[in-house]
Length: 266
Image 1: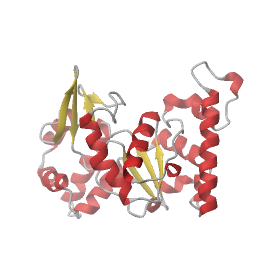
Image 2: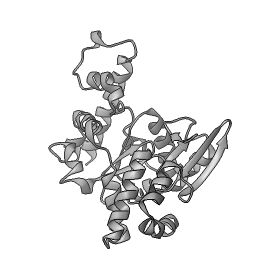
Image 3: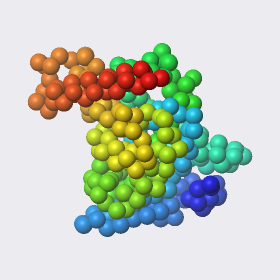
Image 4: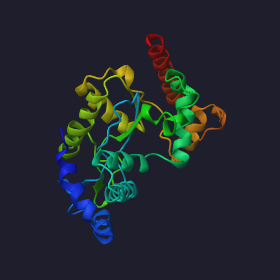
């Protein structure tokens, strides 16, 4: 079934000027799809072309929501593809890949996924292949598919996705629907806020808890010490007071056990 949002916005995007696109990235108006006042804060949700779902995926990497830079990258790449005569489906796929996880965050994520046994489960030498020769096995998405801004700034987890109606509606209409399309995939939430949202959506989509790999440290540079400890690169006695070693030990043990059990069922 065609997505009414792509039908509405892709013709606009193909014909929009550079100035039009920049204006929408800075302050969405034409691309605004929902919004609400939550106490003293204003929540706005804008359209960007993150609609493509990789139907062959065996693993789904889930971020929180596209930020303004990801929104810009996706809009510009989608417009470039459409103007080159690419089909809408191909333009959406290209836009999403163009804006997906990159740089140090990708390297950290690959190291942790390999460490807990995901590469072996997927019969890969390394999960780095998910961004290359094995890209057909991966789907990259967000708990909140479309960019969310709170008082004009990138949404970072507050207020709660599962408690605020305008955000919960996005989980229900987008994330739950995606999960129902990929009922056998593994789901990897990036960070505890995404884990909470993903577990909520999984229960509504009928996805077993065993397929949701909650507990990885967020792969951003801000989590460097937690990642280093998780991977065994930093000893417990050298950790700062901010890092909870016991929680990381429990999370890693739980994830390894999940992967081992899933491997035994394969």
